[in-house]
Image (tube, rainbow, N blue to C red; front, side, top):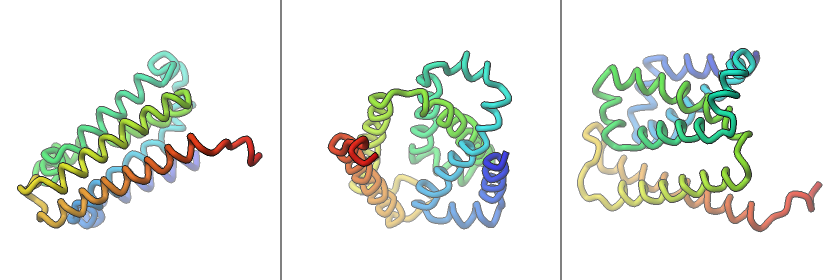
Length: 185
């Protein structure tokens, strides 16, 4: 119950107009702070839903693949430059962001991650690593402004943020393949 309350408080805090305006005013905080925090709020709130509707989650997402697929579709959708731009200009898209990220990405991620095998988890991380390198290259090396609501320097900063995240994911993957946790138990 405590996780649900923390997730709900985080969700409400992120929806407050001054907070949303501040976070969305800078491209990298919009993409790399607000959106992951919305997913985290959904993950925190998802625990109570899993305990209240266990048969639904077991029937719908028994092996974790449908949930992780839904999570990936939602997250990939929100990394498209046009959708970020529309979230700032269209109220309906902004509302869709505040619904889809916590409830269609965060809750399925919480339910699916434990059900996936280690190989499945690493495949998801590899997919996101490739995606982040690609998005970083797109935002860095595109000479044109991809989002009308942000400056070109914001675009470059976001691109380097994607590349930095991808490098961190590569370091994590190298760590998981080279270090045996049983040696430290």
